[in-house]
Length: 455
Image 1 (spheres, rainbow, N blue to C red):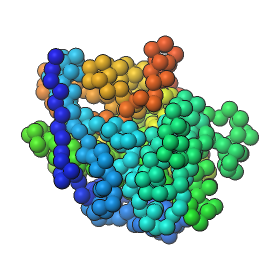
Image 2: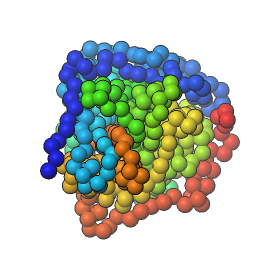
Image 3: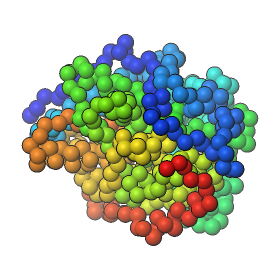
């Protein structure tokens, strides 16, 4: 029986600034475009976001100070612990050292409050009264509901219908923090009513839920929209994860060789990875791997294109890997990874060869999650299981090669609200879904005629 190894930081060692990877890209991100195909200015985003967040979205500054009011709330659970998975290592018989950054210690149980608190705060000081948003598995909706309670805002969450049905306790979490949660597509918006008229049994998608939340936000002067992933400022807020991890590894004299995170919209992956991408840009030898579902293979199979972030095309066109804004993925249980697009900065990293991408089937991921729970104790979210499965692959490869290496993953959230999915796995009711070439080709028709990003 091995002893638990946990690396902690004091409150004083918590990062005081967010890191902006845009400052270190050799090639800048292609600009977001309007419906006419021309680059947009910050004013185009003003109906949706407060100007203080828009300034962060377009910023090229490497560092942004974190306000003391935000730090005061983040200190409820940050700095988060870095664990060494010694029991998992022994179970696998690997020479690799496996570490995980435990983001499940937040009140909402995931990494999501790192940006939710920031977005709620900046909206509050800008005069916003109410936020609307979407959520896939419910982690983001829970985090924003919690964050709005902390700063005194109302919160309305459109939750992808299949996840709303699969994960009823997420809705209760949101209600407990004062958030209103409705299944999407809904009868509350024009977008939702149109989709339900065409398909009353539509399982929903993040693209649809985003459209509904945006539609409601732009119809009220005191309401803004909040996004839990994809955008530049969201990825920036999450970098507290990687910045803390770097300090923790310095404390124990280790240097990671492999950085791993699951990837849906890109926020938790970016949070751990981007400070290490900076190191790689400046010459450090490190592998950085984003892991996604085979049912929604955005980074591994989708083209790099200009596309909208939502089904109604209310967002600007962003240069990213995308399966098409009308894409409705298979109803796998990793609801937070069922997004048609990928963060422009993560997409850019893959395009520039700074980040690798891999896609995995859900049965391998659930097997990995159960192995992790039975060795390390913590029950992972279905999304997190993708990172764990990749870690196990890397650890087994190290065993085959007889090579030591240090692996770290972002343990992005716990699975205590996802136990029905585990039950389905144990009962043999889950199956693997792989997006067919025909279905992907069909989904991509919606981007025909849109501008193309530079090669």
